[in-house]
Image (tube, rainbow, N blue to C red):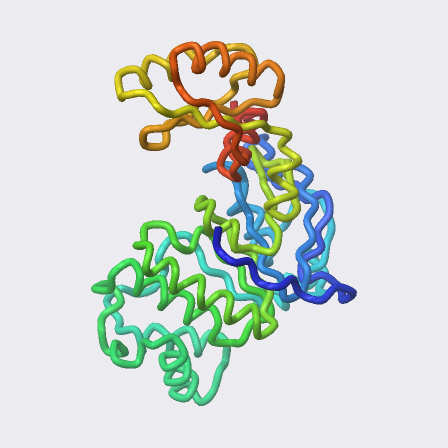
Length: 320
């Protein structure tokens, strides 16, 4: 597990404090009574399956969408009355690369600087390029960049105006592990300097680098807290099954699925992770089926991924 930064000091007003947010489209509640607080200087993870309402919630919180119901403050500004002020004080990085691909990196940054009224433009562009190690690529067309460099350009644009809050919507999707690691190193550097970060992600190792996580499923917030608190709150027990060859493991996988107490069976290389909420029934099934087949059965720590899948399975599809 990656090292988690020291939590920010408590006692100050939250950077995000929203209550009962609702947003509907076509009669369907995409965001359903979401209440969330993010402390200043905190890195908060926002987890959930595709279509769970993460992007819509983020857009409401950064002032791009008006909620149908609910109240709240972002950076001390009222979500409804002060949407324009919120937009100027946050940095929002969207899921998709949203810059002009036929302009250079420097030209894109100059355009963003102009939108925020930053002067002199050249100074802001040069400083931003230097801070993120993009100076040597200033004249490269944005459309020719790799996924990792596009990501860095998007982040550079988001922080040019020195926002107090950074909202990142699946920022590392489609980039390689090295680029992801470097991106997160930068996020930690920004948070250490006092910036608050809310980041949505599907990567469990990234979630584990956050101070706290919030899990949303089909529009409803179903879990929140530190990683340890969320995993514990899922109430799951996990066993590892190993010691058989490939064909025998496949057969064992099939026999375990649907057995009393067994809710998840996940192959990891040559071992199986078997997960369930009823610890007694789970242990009895695993001992009988796997132990009876000659496999080794040992208890293991439940992972955040196990909890993630558990929450997905227990939520009601609001689009069904």
